[in-house]
Amino acid sequence: MALEIIGWDALRELRMRGMRPSLPVILTSKAHLIDRLQGVGCMVILHKAGESPPVKLLDGLDVIAIFDTCKLAARFIKFAGRHGVGFTRYRAWCSCGKILTVVSFDCESYACDVKWFEGQGKLA
Image (cartoon, rainbow, N blue to C red; front, side, top):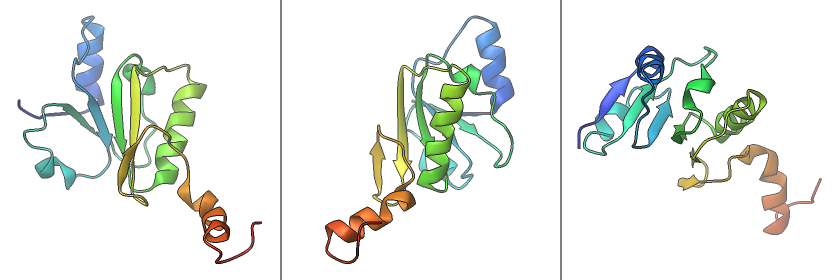
């Protein structure tokens, strides 16, 4: 399957025609991922960092968020919730754990818990 690299405008046009992607939509601000995703068979939206995403276009879709930090993925899911967006499925790349997760949170906010659990510090 071919990788289709699009921007928000192309997704907006697709949705205005009453259509939707049947494969997962990967939302990323990492331009270097494009080459690595060739042959995956999904739609990729290359999002410009710092711009407010038109998140309602993703309503009802299978979305994979790949951002620079786990904190950004956590912020994105909260942003979508505040705008009433529900995903068919949402996954985010956890750069700390190097895994695709269905639970998106800021790993840094739990760093003291991990240190405590591993006996390296005190729980704050």
